[in-house]
Length: 409
Image (cartoon, rainbow, N blue to C red; front, side):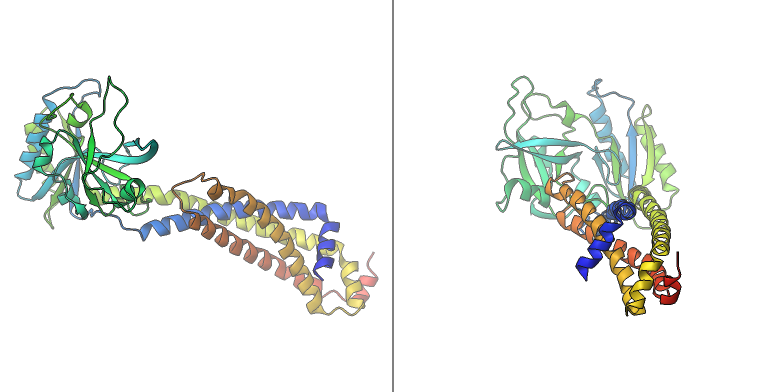
């Protein structure tokens, strides 16, 4: 039976090739949308690592370029921290170079025994963990005493700890190989703490390697001047008391402006940044879903039309089958099986292409299991679509009477 069906499919290879091509492209679109959907769903169920509740952010514009380093900037930023901490609605305040949910990133690679590992970095002040509710699982967070160490203290997340140290305890160990550049040596860095997780992009982002460095606003304790770590952060993060009214925003800006008249400030609740990040992450999925829906509609209509035209041309063939004893159910099943065989060819072509992505590690931040899930979703959807599109033409074909087919010319 199967051999006979393959022979029928081969005899109409030109027409069937168009159907297979339609199914192939539909499978690819469904795979992309399915993989993205599973990826976001999986990310939601991973630990976030911080809390944005009752957290406000202040973007500080100092009107300075990276090349123009003013030694008075750091003391001015320290005054901002102290002034803000003294406000009644503020529970704690910290400085940060990069904010959670923001589109800005600070990424780089570090060498470990000749192996380079990429990570996201953030330079923060001591109270950042208190503001964001970070969970320390090993060692400790930055303290006042860490500002006087001759090496740069860092706190890493568990993902980074596993990538670099495996199952070993990372506390107190050197973070990265010594710099080979004698003219611009990097400071020695050591791990003082490990946090559970920190998904800077928010709930819908993937977990990755993350490194916190202490912002030394009082100057480097020893060695060459480390401008990048002595520059003040570009943002303030505030933990405010529950129920703080929005009118506090105006009072906050006035107080900050009084401390630094030449600077400008923009205040945002972190919940607003979270909502923006959600829209930014979900937009590709929504657009892809709409495109996939219209594509499935077009493919479905195309399959029905091609099948119907194909069956009209095979009326004599179907009638002869009925005349030789085939039942309506046999004809119905034949058309369905032919369509499923064509669908299998299209799915196989698409699978051969998409399976290269995890095998070649083309998109490293997505786990292979998510790709497999996306393939299964695409397969299920395309087979369901093919079966539904074949139902009506196969039903009409099964109603062909032998006498009518024998008179057909």
